[in-house]
Length: 105
Image (cartoon, rainbow, N blue to C red; front, side, top):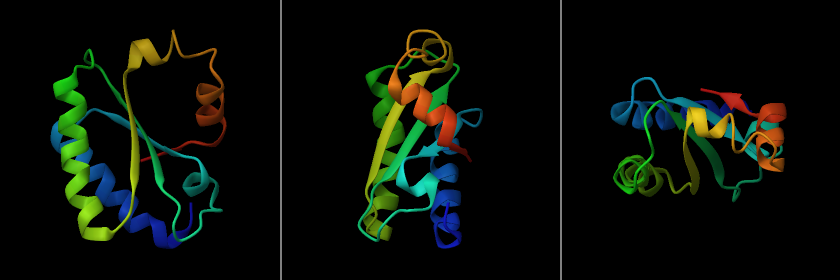
C-alpha cells in the first residue's frame, strides 16, 4: 500500500469498527499492491463473526459512504461472515488473491 493511502485506510478501519469492533478488514487489489492510480477504487473485505444480513451490509456501507463523499474515493465492499468466507469461498479465485495480496487493517 502506498504511504499516502495509509490515512484513508485508517479512516476506513475506524468507520467499520464503529459497527463491529472485532471485524477483520482487508484491503486488496491495486491499493494493496501499491500500483493504484488516482482514480482506482478501494477493494475492501469485511469479515464479521456474525451472520451477514442486509441490515449489517447497509450499516457498513452507509458509514463508508460518508467517507466516500468527504474524500472523493470510491469503495467496493465485500461483507462475509468469517466462517462462511473461510469455508465456502476458500476455493474461489478472489479468496486466493486476497490471501496472497490482502493488507489487514
